Structure formats: C-alpha cells, structure tokens
Length: 99
Image (tube, rainbow, N blue to C red; front, side):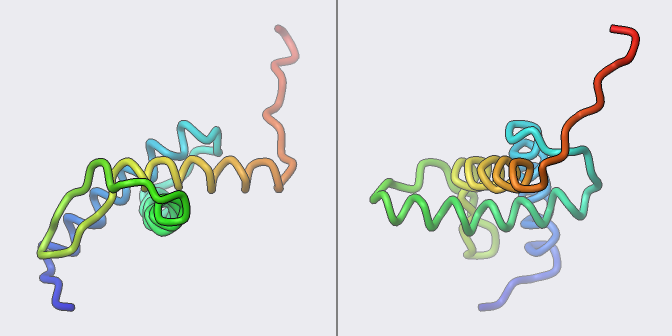
C-alpha cells in the first residue's frame, strides 16, 4: 500500500471534514482539526463495519491514490461514535442563568 504525501494530505482533509460533520450531527463538543480528523477516521472504520454487517452498499466514496474513503459511512460512523461518547461521558451543556 503506497500513499503519496499529497494523497495522505487529501485523505486527512476529507477525514477532517467528515469528522466535523459527524461531530456536529452527533452533538459532541467543539474541538480542533486533529480531533475532527481522528473522529473522521474512526467514523470511517465504524461506518464501514456497520455497512458490511448490515449488507449495505458503499453509497459515496472518494478514491485518493487508489485508496477509497467512504464519505457517507464515515459521517454516519462519526456521528454514532460521538453520540455514544457524549452519552457515556454524562456531560451536559450549561444552561444560561438568565434565560
């Protein structure tokens, strides 16, 4: 498996975008770019696993340097991962005292 530097950077950008979308859907806290990239890759693994387990097709993928990245399953997996982490952490948003 050979990935060029440009290919790796493109995969990181795509994973970051998918992770950021998944975090906003899943209701997770705000974070940085590195957290979005990590959540995007975890979401891709989790989403692809769920798709294979449920016998669902790859809906929308991006090919970079011969490597495919599942966009839709990454977003679904990232949102699921963030939602589960958010539920397990038990943190709640602070209410506005003046509302």
